Figure: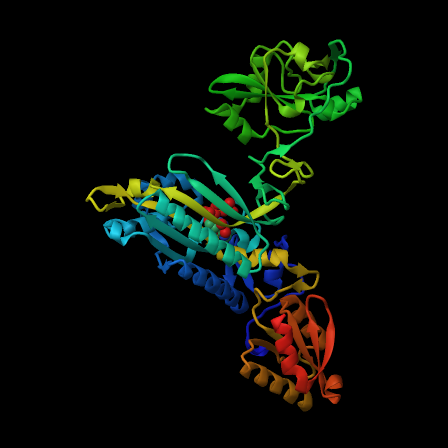
Length: 563
Ligand code: ATP
Ligand code: MG
């Protein structure tokens, strides 16, 4: 492809609204342009990459027997009401004014609609149906470029089976296909699994990637592969020893001290000597939760520990419940259920609130001064703590979801009446699975993992072209002829080449664009080297430059691209 005839509007400057590397580089390298918040256009080389990724996905989906569909994005609202998902999606669902349509954020309903009455017999099952199609979600505050678009391309697949054993097999096939897809796309991913243990087992796995652009925080062990959202992740913590002697309990006047920081400052103590109090309302009954001063309550863990409905008490409820406002609440003498995090287990010489504004209590011994205290893991796992599975060190970081496989079970077939007849003529709901991958997200995440200060670093897994041919000073006939010949010959050899044939751009502009666009191998044709019948080959990632004789170029390129 000739640069002069291709729309590749590269930019020197960082676009104003872009903050994460992939967003900045996709705009600067001319892959995308923003139309409106969360809505992006793909330009020729950006779209070329989207097609390459889609092809990889398609090949792996076809390899497990997937059949490609193309469903409408515009859906009658009625069918979404039947499954309760107009409400479940809430503001994320785009509605069409004046008519009862929605723009589909995913396609479980529509695939189930087509399966209904069409897959009548066990003989027609199993099936895997998929598509690569545009989805619409009114994401609040989309700031990460195409990683979180309001319109985005998803590969969504759905499996239809006679029973849960069948579903297990379809799920397993997708699990394997997904691993292959992400490996082929060159992504360093990990898997976060979740099993709800509900009847029929609604197992799911998320394929995730470490990225500051992510909105999930996960704990990950690179040794054994344990990975979990910090909302559920557990870690091994060293028990904190009791101090040798328990002090007498004593009250301290702490005027205007409202936070743990202020308390530590005022008493010249460390946060870890404090028991931080939080009141929650569990099924209408107050509960006191105690955390070590530097830790926050993990509400997800609290919810699973307590069951039922749990919410933090409102500030204006606190005084009535405890006699004090937030900042002066504590466990001594309080009459309610008390649950403390494991880090506080059997500790002594602790500080906490006195349930009286502007007073705290010191010398608290949980084994002596607080009766019927329960202990539970209520904290967030942190980097450096030990992995509960293999004892090695956990890392906690932001991550982003690339794909998701999910055992739906019969939720949609029940609500939409998707049933089949077994060999005895008995009818049953079809058992479904659903499996999604964000296509643009793969592209952006690849860039998140492969860039440097000059631009993108494509590699053998993913690149818009095999080679970037840079012709310098093409107004000179000799260089022009040499560059054109190389372009022609290597194209005939089957290489896909971006040929910078622009007449009026300087060498500096061409070099910068080549580094920004980031094709792994650059062939630079210039007067000086041509005098010695040579060209220069630059390896984009390392910056290494190799002088190569014209008649050895083909072999050298073949060698380099094989590596
Ligand atoms: P997230 O937690 O990131 O919002 P999700 O759980 O809503 O993702 P799914 O409904 O499981 O995502 O969709 C399947 C896949 O579609 C995701 O794994 C992701 O790769 C992609 N995806 C989801 N939302 C977006 C979006 N707003 N922009 C781009 N890709 C998206
Ligand atoms: Mg989402």
